[in-house]
Length: 251
Image (cartoon, rainbow, N blue to C red; front, side, top):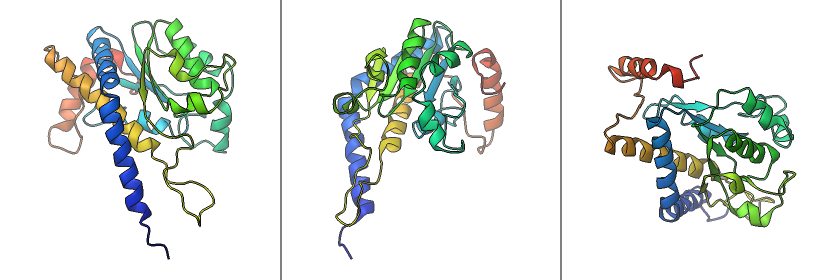
């Protein structure tokens, strides 16, 4: 049996990636958090989208204790999550031209809103088209992606471009192409993906920046509390009622 400790190696790799984004993405995180704060203060709405496993960090910031109540999930049928059957359908839909535009035209997104688009590779038609069309509607776009894919893979969008090319702000997760941190001679493929850990951390760091920025401006951040602490439900009821016209996950 090998003396290697894969669990420790994976955690070390994840910690190193978190250190990288802390040190090298600090400016972008500050800019993204400030944009969210500006949107909230100016009466705009917040949305997050991710396809497949990239939907997990998006879902993590919606209706979340300690998070901004105004963050809404933008859903694309068959793409958000892996509960669709067969699961491979979601991957296929990411490559369909025209799907993102149809979804956005039927969504509540409007000029003055901000949309966070999460796509590890940023190469598929769906996230690229979504960013392009959202900006055409007057929506600001924050892209959370691995920039490495743009130099090591080819785009699947007709324009030949990537998500990173159509964003107001880009947060680079620094994830290597293939999203697998470990290898073993006895295992035929790389394994242990870290993109969810790092991307979720980027999202939470950005929302933390937004909340602190609003507070610095004298604006109470529209935060939710845990429903499992005393007074949590009453607190959340107040916030949800105050911002009811900008929250879509209750409808």
